[in-house]
Image (tube, rainbow, N blue to C red):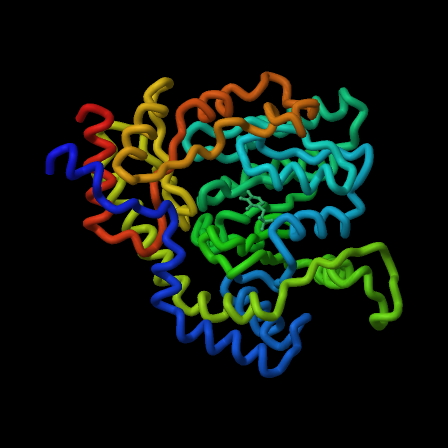
Length: 384
Ligand SMILES: *Cc1c(COP(=O)(O)O)cnc(C)c1O
């Protein structure tokens, strides 16, 4: 194909939600129609059914459907009484919602560097972040590891470091529901796990949605109360200050249909990621999940030495191929969070990743010819 023909090919979507919609259209329309017929829009039967199915899927004792991934994080912090004067440790190399949740309850995010190989929080830096928090007169209360891009955190050492500092672990699995660590699905690492069903996440609904997973009966009861305005013995009794934080029945109905094909979609994502890696490993640093981890590939992210990323993105864009950079501006360099403490020693790995990462189109319906077109364009742009 000559250059003129290449530039005239149809654009490729970064995440193709329409492909899944074509596959599931009829079943989801019928599920939504059932909700329209029974009219229990708030905490209807589909919410309870979904909570039971998601708990079984993840292996956690409880699942509580909430309005978003951000609310899932906020509700757990509220339930544990985290607030002003408290420090919440987390990576800076994450989406803003991780820090936002801590800030919304009045606590101060404290940033910890990540591992070079996994992009996830480095447990060896937790003690130094605790020290930085104490130096500022803050009380360290929790750590929020983030299972970034669909890959689980190395949870065992994080748990050990958290226990040593008397912190509870709130796992931010917003991008990684369905992923496994040491043959166990995410959902029961730490005190609680927060998940998002934003449409572009591996398991997404048709709007905003999220869930909290926990094995702790007391915490489950508390967040159930908090998501309904701190409801006590009945809905006219307000035992505590809560919020409107429920998952909509319609979104639960959508998720019940999508959950049926989710295991198959995870396998498709794994196949597509392996195909990318086989085709690109000689020209870029490709992601390699450690042994015993199963990623859900929310993103397929490669690394290029500094300065090569921009030209690659430009060349692909000219051929109708979108890319994205998560995250060019880590949280400690964002105006909203720039004043927050950083663990002693700084965040050198985070800084490096921010200059080197670039994500390619990734979803369960990326077919081989389209992927071949992406791979060929990447190789051409990188001069190979
Ligand atoms: C998407 C995301 C969230 C927030 O989820 P919402 O449902 O959009 O509120 C939290 N943390 C991380 C790491 C995310 O990627």
